Every structure is written in C-alpha cells, then in structure tokens.
Amino acid sequence: MKHEEVAKQIIRDVGGAENINNAWHCMTRLRFNLKDEKKVDYTALDKIPKVVGTKYQSDQLQVVIGTDVGDYFAPLAKELGLDENSQQGNTEKKGAVSLFMDTVSGVFGPIVPAIAGAGMIKGLMAGLVALNVISNQTDTYLVIDMIASGVFTFLPFFVAASAARIFKTNQYLAIAIAATLQFPTMTNAVAEGNVSAFELFGFVPVPVFNYAGTVIPIIFAVLVLSYIYRWVDKVLPQVLRTVFTPTLSLFIAGLLTLTVIGPISIHLGNLLAAGVAGLFTISPVLAGVVVGAIRPIAIFTGLHHAMTPIALQNFANQGYDMLMPMMFMANMAITGATAAVYTKVKTKEEKSIILSSAVSGLLGITEPALFGILSKYKKAFIAATIGSSVASAFISFFGVRIYGYILSSIFSLPAYIGQYFIFAVLGIIIAIALSFVLSYMMVPKQQDEAAEITNEVDLHAVAKGDYVPLEDVPDEVFSTKMMGEGFAMNSTDGAVFSPVAGTITTVFPSKHAIGIKTSNGVEILVHMGIDTVALNGQGFEVFVKEGDQVSVETKLAQMDLAYLQSQGKETMIIVIITNMDRVLSFSGMRDLEGQHSAGALLERAVLN
Image 1 (cartoon, one colour):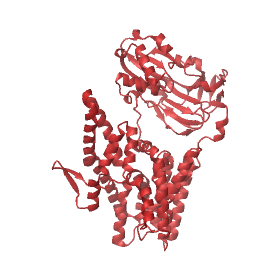
Image 2 (cartoon, one colour):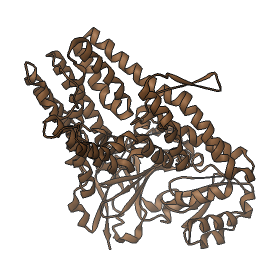
Image 3 (tube, one colour):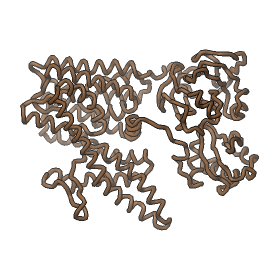
C-alpha cells in the first residue's frame, strides 16, 4: 500500500479528521491527541498491513509503525492540514556554526560533482599558466576556462536550486532569485563602475554589487523565499494561488534580496576585510593567527573575496603583500585535512570525490573540499582551521611575502623564490602535515569493509548498569516485541554508548532515540527512556549526527537521570533490531541479569 493510502486509513480508523485534535510522531509511532477515544476502531487499525500495533496511554493514541514512521506522517499531516516539520517536535537546539555548516553541507552535497570537476580543470589550467606552459591569452585557454569557470561564476544558480530542496520551496522561484542577482543590468553596472545604487520607487536604494560566485546571499534569500511562499499561499484564497502565489513570492523575496539580504552579505565581507587590515597594523603574527583561522570559514561563506582588494592595494602601495601567503597556507591546510579523510572512508564513490577534491585544493580550488568534504566531516574542518592558523602565524613571523598576484596553489610556489622561499616551503609542510595529522586523529574511521561479509551482529551493552530482558520493559510495544527483538538496560550514570559498529541513520529531534545501521544491513534502534518524546529534548545531550560512523566505544548521548525521574519518566534504555526480516535467529539470553560494563557483549543476531 502507498503511504498516502495507509495515512488515510489510519485517519479513518481513529475516528476521522474531526476526532483528531493534534498528531505528531516519535521515532517509531504516530501519536494522536483525540477528542473521543471511544471512536477509535482498534480492530481495523490492527488490520492495516503497516501498523505493527496500537496502544492508548497518557491520553494519547499510539499507532506503532516502525522507524520509517516519518514516511507515513508526511501524508497524514497533509491530510490533516498540519505543519509536517513543526509536528515532529523538531526543537533540537544546535550551535549557530554547526547549524550553518549542516545547512551548507546539505545544500552543496548534490552540487559537489559539478564543483569538483570544474575545480580540477580550473586548478590544472592555473598551474599550467603559472609554469608558463600555456598562456591565458590563447583561445584554447579561454574556451577551457569557460568550461571550468562557469560553475563558479554562476554558483548562485546551483545553490538556489539545491537550497530550495533543503528549505522545501519552489526550485524555479529560487533560481529566479539567483537570476535577479546576476541579471546583466546588475553585472554591467558593476563592470562599468559608474553606478553605486539604483533607486527603487525613487527613494529605496538598491546597491550595486558583484554577486558572481557568492554563496551566503542566495542561501538566505531562498530561506526567506520559503517562508514568504508558505505565508502567501496560506493567506490567498484557493482560486488565486496558482497565479498569485508565485507572483507575490518572487516580487517580495526579490525586493528583499536586492535591498537587504544581498547588501548585508556583501557588507559582512567588507567588514571582515577591514578587520584583517587592522590586524596587520597591530602585529603580522597576530594577523597570521587570526587570518589563518578565519580563512577556511571565509571561503566557506564566500566572504573571502573581500580579502582580495586588500592584497591588490598592498601590491600598489608597498610592492608586496603578506596576506596572500596566508591564503596559500589555508588552501594547503584544507588539502591536508581532506587528504586525511580519504584514509577514513571505504566506499569507492566517496574516495573518488575526496581524491579529486584534495587534488583540486592542491591546485588552489578549495570549494570542492570545503563544501563536499569538510562541511560533512566537521572535525576535519577544525583540523584544517588549526593547520591554517599555525602555518600562517609561522610564515608571518618570518615575514614571508609575495610580489605579484597569483592563484594560491602549489604551482604558485616559484613566485616565492628569494629570501623567504625556505619559510614558505616550511609553511606548506606545516599546513599540510598538521592538518592531515589532526584530521586523521579526530575523524573516526568507517567500519572496515570486511565486516560487511559477516552474517552475525553482536549487540553490546549501551550503558553501565543492569541488563533487563525485553519482556520486562514496562511498555508493551517493546515487551511484546512489536518492534523486534532486543534488550534493555538501566543505566547507573546516564552515559549511552552504541551497541554496534555502524552508521548513524537517524537522530530524532527530541533526542530520545537514535537509529544505527550496521554494514550488513541490520537496523538498530536505541530508545532512551519511555514516553520521553514528550520532553522535547530536555534531559538529553546527543553527541552524534546522521552519517557519523560509530563503534561500541562511541558515546551516543548523555541522559540526565535526575531530571527524567523528576518528570516521572522511566529511564530504561531499550535496544531493538527493527528489521527482523534480516535475522535468522536471536540469542535472547536470559542469564545476563545483573550489572554489566558499557561495551560488554550481551546478545548476538545471526542473519539469514
């Protein structure tokens, strides 16, 4: 049955939409607040093929679906006119940097092949020019440069389409916003340089800026567009939506982008540039530490372009520049950190992307590495930042400088020949080696491919504490094994570890449940506490995210046992195999009562 059909049957059997006050879901169950529980047809609900079981508890009807419950909630929310996102209890608080990087990672994931391929071509061509193998004035160079530079020049278009997918809005309207920023009226005004701003309605200034290759303006523009589109679509009558929703959304979002979002993003870059210039007046070494630290995130956000005018002005005023060598160190540090990630992954596809990104970074094009790799492996990003900062401080201490503008790639090294050459070389070694070593130490290795051929999965203790047979769990959804086989534990300290080696597939927004998939396809649910979804994440601190590789030594979360108990919640940790169709036999040991250390082998599943 299709998800939509199941959702409609569930709504019908709980008494119809008119009997539902509210609906949401946790990791495995649809949850309903009903007007009248007597209207629920439990017999009919249990006959729906996808429904594993039902129960009524704490004034909630719980319909057990499984870990793919989100696929059924989406059409159910649509039928009921609910906000799909808000009803999932998505109140997880993330740090601003982490949230920003997660968003950019999601936006740039689909774009990586394009920027990696273009970056490789662009870097190779820049290297050949630097070595005087070819001239950048030939038609051959110009044609190949069109192939390589098109992606970066019109990057806002790619970002707009991908961001629309992340923010769940119309892709073509998002692309239209990007087209607005790069329409010839704007680009020609920038090129001619005789207009600083257009006057909208005769009094609203629309600043003239070059948005080619920028990232931040269009991401925020599409985010704003997503809210505007939903608001307009909600307030307009149904008969007017087809024509006027896109019309008003594009008009309002376009004006806001040109007058507010875009200019603010550009001014942030200029502010960054002014700050960097001020640091050099205080101390070149301090400038090295700070510039080296902020350079990776500046490239990441597109604000790095603001540093170029400073370098060019330095060439004009004093005949040399000390900022560009720091950019060089940052690129090498990014390359080193990316290369270390290559040693940690196992799939050929990911290795191929990482290798091309690292080579591209070596050639001076770091966007593929930053957007495609380091945004995903944040510890590697930190390693690159440290390597960049240390190497930049080192070369600044010895006064390394460059006497002409050149792309910051390994091929630009000949431009440093002279009294500072040895320090430039040592700086490159420090940048690559330090970021590589730190990244190698900090990024966990993916599970060895050899594990993929095994037909067994060992389940380990997720906490220090007492083993509890699944039948004794005070929740019949688990105790009757509706969800699958497993076990539970009572923790003594609240620390929760992974029961298996595998990949994090789901971290529920309310933090009370985490999904893990082993290399041989077994899906594990770690459910912390009972009915703790209602706490909306309070009492839980989660240390992993989707896509992370974990082992039995990985700490997944920390439970605040005192807080959970003060809220009247059971703190038992339940471990369930949710795809029992993969399991031939489960050990189901019953002589394990008593206390165990986290990581101790408890159960074993033999696969079919």
